[in-house]
Image (cartoon, rainbow, N blue to C red; front, side, top):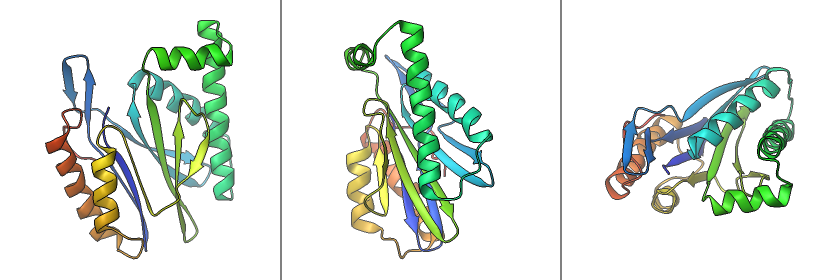
Length: 196
């Protein structure tokens, strides 16, 4: 899978990820897993972990919906993220001829894991939102940080231990690079350059 992380700071938000894709025994380093997407006047950063085919298709769907949006609140953005997931899952059901329940079983049986982490700021308020393809529910972070992917447990431990929402973006940026580096040293599914 990978490591994606987001941290809310006193002056904004920091997001980071590795750049390795693992397919079977093959590894490719150089993947783009962090995407800026315009939601009207607001730029939302989207980090992806999991099956590249599914995350890429979801992100394409999201870009189409976000392009014609004009959100004003955090909830508006969450609703757009949710709407894109609903549309994406509907297209998967059409392609495979599945009901919602059959699609859920297919994703589990095929071990298809996809998690997307969204970071954005409206005015002075920064937010992190997570979307998991299995749950298909948009969730706001319940702390100042989020980490997902195979390196998430280590990432969460380090983020909890060394960061807080009162730190500056510049300091958290340096810490995020270090945390991703530690994850890459300890998780064979994390690798490549760190992107922040």
